[in-house]
Amino acid sequence: MDARAQTSVQQRLAIRLAAWRPDVTGNVLARFGLTGRNAVIAVPSLWLLLFFFIPFIIVLKISFAQTRMGVPPYTPLWDWTSEHFLRLTLNLENYLFLARDSLYFDAFVSSIKVAAISTALCLLIAYPMAYAIARADAKWRNTLLLLVVLPFWTSFLVRVYAWIGLLRNNGLINNALMGLGIIHEPLVMMQTDFAMYVGIVYSYLPFMILPLYSNLEKHDDTLIEASVDLGATPFRAFLQITLPLSVPGIIAGSMLVFIPAVGEFVIPRLLGGANSLMIGRVLWDEFFNNRNWPGASAVAVILLLVLVLPIVIFQRYQTQDAHGGVHR
Image (cartoon, rainbow, N blue to C red; front, side, top):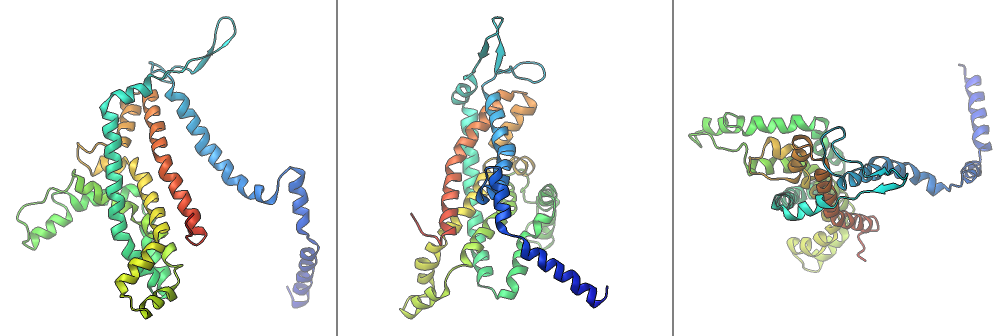
């Protein structure tokens, strides 16, 4: 294409762009009763409807059914009587059984404890890393962030199985320690709480680093300079300025780690011991071993209700962080 023809194409494109008016799109949306804002949020709303709300309604419906032999392994929630009336049968026994059986309560408490300890460990490790990345030279930040998310390019199961190779009795860690003469017999690390915490912290650490970095990177450095000019030590300036301003990032990262860690199943199953009682494992046993779908659905509903509070806190602090960390 010569220069004259290319110029002609560019002119026609410029004429079409000049003739396009934004109000045309607005008229099309108005014809369907939509505004621009509603059109933007329609896609994520539809996504949540299809993949969260509808599945939750199905699980909630199953939780009020009764267990039976057959396919599906639960009774229908409603049926038609001989007089052609619709009969609704709600079975509350599943929820009452959860209150009576201490296994489920212990599993909930154990899961919350493991998630809380894992979240605290992630915070202790991630905060210095996020602070260092936020204060690093601008040309190195993207590279450092890439190193943080790099493990996500590998399958989750592969990463967990890699820790099995590191922590087992004849694994890399024990062989290295015995080769250096530090120990004379293998350390028992596999199938312990230690291995479980290592796997959870390693897997969820990026979820803590990224929100913290996003918060710390937006801090105004002149506040630290002003505090130093007024006689504050670097540690005191950190405690009184940096740490309070980073609370929204801490809350956001903690929720991103705590919420999925409560229902974690794979890591406790592969790395944890036989006594590592987690609610995810209870759900698996009820669904696939006992085929008690109504009971498992009731456990899932209760678990969701337990996590509603931290989710609300997470959303609140996300909103505060978006508005500059202003507390309301």
